[in-house]
Length: 227
Image (cartoon, rainbow, N blue to C red; front, side, top):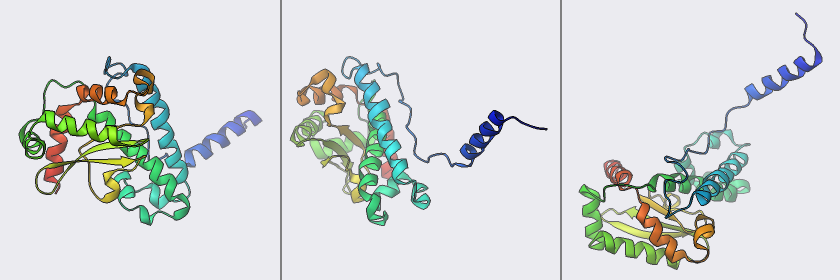
């Protein structure tokens, strides 16, 4: 059987493509439609935040790891916990883009219109550390307003059965300090500027209205069991 030049080129391209391993890190799908969080978070912000910003972190992470196949195969959380094992030449790229990928992957799951609230051991942990859910939300809002520039606010389980509120700059996270967060709230301007402009306080109040407590209750149980 003979093939013409066009078919030969197409075969060569497909052979090369098939030989290339698929990127380990991929953009997760949103667990809800982009307009599901209206009016608190607008659909256009969700489209850009997820499809542009998060996708860029994934693409840049895969690019940074392209020459280090052994690192590219590591789970993302493990990669972030052991950044010192990443070559210095790509460490900043992995820190920023791997952090952005991990942080946003959690953020999408944390959001969602839930009919429940904290329950069980999570409710007890909130009461232990903040007296009430309202007290916890006040701490989260205050911490978010205290972040200078871009960063994140975190709710992290503590060894004593409680919870701590932490902040981190840029795309850093508790994972990089060996801790696993329960909840993360993005306070970069791209998370809210289309709807709220410079009114971060309004954004923080709004985002706390769309917390997926069903997910957080289950996640907390898993984090406690994994200790």
